[in-house]
Length: 563
Image 1 (cartoon, one colour):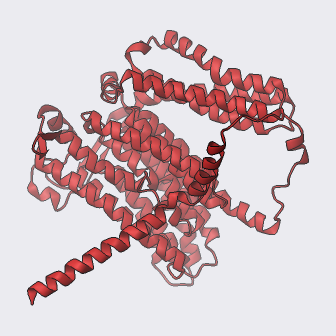
Image 2 (cartoon, helix red, strand yellow; image 1 turned 135 degrees about the vertical axis):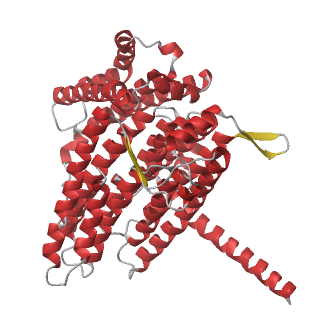
Image 3 (cartoon, helix red, strand yellow; image 1 turned 180 degrees about the vertical axis):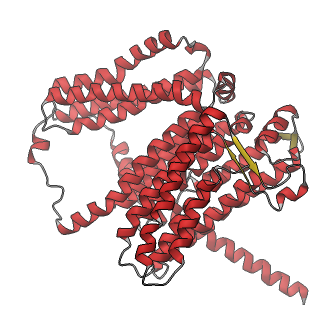
C-alpha cells in the first residue's frame, strides 16, 4: 500500500535519469509505474473497505520529535477514494503529456514534474497527521509555481509569481491553525485531535468581552488555507492568471490540486462539526464564490478562462456543500467535477487548434434562431423543474422514512437534486432544431439520471464514507441554519427558476419582459465589471503597491532612528 505514493516518484526519477538519447523511451516507460499506482490505489480502496483503515507511522506519536519528522500514512475510505481519483487522472494526464510536449525542449523536466506532483498529492491525502498534511500542502504550492513551465514568457512568469505569492497567505494561515491546534490539544494525530477537541472545550479571548471556541479558531485558520488552494473569493484571482501553463497542467490542476480545500474540510470533518460558526462562514464564502465564478464565466471570450471560472464556480458549490454539512456530497461533487474537467481541458487544445484552422467552427445553424421550441418542450421543462421535484420530495420522504421537518440534511440533498436537474434541463432548450418530443424525452431522462445519481450519493456514498449515521446527523445539526433563512433560500431559488422559464417562453414568442430603465443601465455596468473579473487584479496590484510604500517608509524611519 505504501508503494502507491512512491510509484509516481519513481516515474519522475526514471524520466530524469539517463542520457538525452533515451529520454523518449524512458518517458514512455514511466507510464507503467504511474499506472501501477492507479491499480494499487484500487486494491487499497478494496482493502480499506473490507478490512478497515491502514496506519503506518515512522515516528512515535507520543514523542515531541513528531513535529520534526512527522512522516506516516493513514489511509481510510476517504483517503483511498482520493488516491484512486488522483492516480487515475494522473495516469491519463501523463500519457497525454508525452505526445503533447513531444517537441518541447524541456519536456523531460515537465514530465518529471507531473510525476512528482502526483506523488505529492497522494502523500497529502494519505497523511497520518496534520503536520505531514501541512508539509505536503506547502510543497504543492511550490509545485504550482514550477508547473507554469514556460518561465521565459513574461505573462506566464507573472501568473506563476502571483499564484505563489497568494498561496503563501493560505499556507501561513494553515500553519497558524496547525500550531494553535497543537498548543490547545497537544497532538496533531487526527483521531486523537478529534477526541480531545470534543472532550475538552476551550475558549479563547480575542479581546475583552469577545471569546471564540478553540475548534472555531483552529478551523477558521485552516479554512483560509483551503480557500487559497480551492480559489475561493476573494482569494480566487490566481487561478485565471495561471492559464498560460501547458494544457495538461490545467487538467491536473482543475481535476486534482484545486480539490484540496474540499478534501481538507472532509479530512477534518469531526473538527469542523464542532464549529457551526466555521460551517456558516464556509456556506457564505462558497455561495458567493459559486455565484461570482459562474457569472464571470458567462462573460469570458476565451475558452481557457471560461473553463477556469467554471472551476471556481464549481469549487464554490463544493465549499457551500461542506458549509451545509453535506460532506459526502462535496466529495461526490469533487470526483465528478475532477473527471469532467480533466476530460474537458485535455480536449480544449483540440478545439483551439480546430478553431484556428476554421474560424467558422462550429458552423452557425440558421435554423437555430428561426425555429422556436414548442409548447411541449416548454411545458415539459416547466413541469420537470417545478412540479415533479415536489412529487419526488414526497415520494423520497415516504421511501427513505426521513422526517424532513426535523432534518435540513435531507432537504439539502433534494435541493441540490432540483438545482442540478434544472440547470441541465434549461440547457436543453437550445436544441431547437430537433423534434420537440425528443427534447422533452431528453429532459425527462436527464431528470431521472440526476435523481438516481444523487440518491446514490445520499444512500450508498454517504454510508461508504461516513458509516456512522449519528456522525452524519451531527454534521447537519452543526450546520443547521435558521428556518427563516433556509426557507428563504429555497423560495428564492424557486422564484429564479420560474422567472427563467418565463423569460425563455416570452423570448421564444417574440415578447420581452418589462425592465425599468435604471435596471437596464445597471445590467450593462455589471456586465463590464464582471467581464473585467470585478477588477480584482487591479485592486490587489494597488494594494500591493500601497503595502510596499508603507514598508519602505517604515524601513527609512528605522534607518534614521538607528543613526
